[in-house]
Image (cartoon, rainbow, N blue to C red; front, side):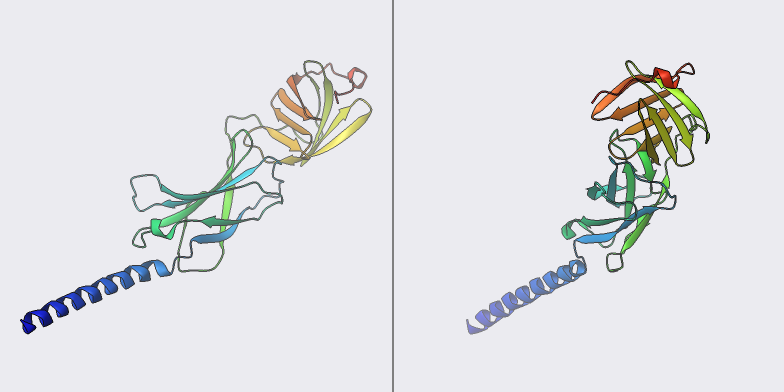
Length: 237
């Protein structure tokens, strides 16, 4: 009887020790995962971000070569500064299988979700490395979009109830209105040419344009060679 009790106690102790070993092994697998990935998103061109730009950073499982990456985590940023834009992507350590391959992708879109910049290649993640990750994006160009006007080009535009004259320069445009002139820096655009100071926006695509000022969207804008300075009327306030 005593022998049976001793045997039972030894089996129970062995079971407990085995469970502890398994738990320690699993904890060791997750121990190196901090639950966050830090770094920055940037691009090489010297051009300003639109005021309405959003930066999206995604963590994906790319283990399967015959399929797109599986979503793991995402962070969306509304930058208040120019690039580089810092990110701090949080993820659940329990969602990570260290035997699989993970990568970061990033993109920049505008308020219309038009793609402006994107990762050309995935950036592999090494979870045991503490160094910040730098994601360098490439411009997403629309090959069918008309090119922006050449520098020193002057074009008159007429909207439904408003007219203005645009003079294009390298990296900016001057908008001549009744009694004043606005200078708008060129910002990112997936198609056409977009200029904005955060309050006033002029977006030119070929012979058409969009103009936003003082909270008003001026619609139906198109190039009009007949527009002269004498035709300019004050904008609505």
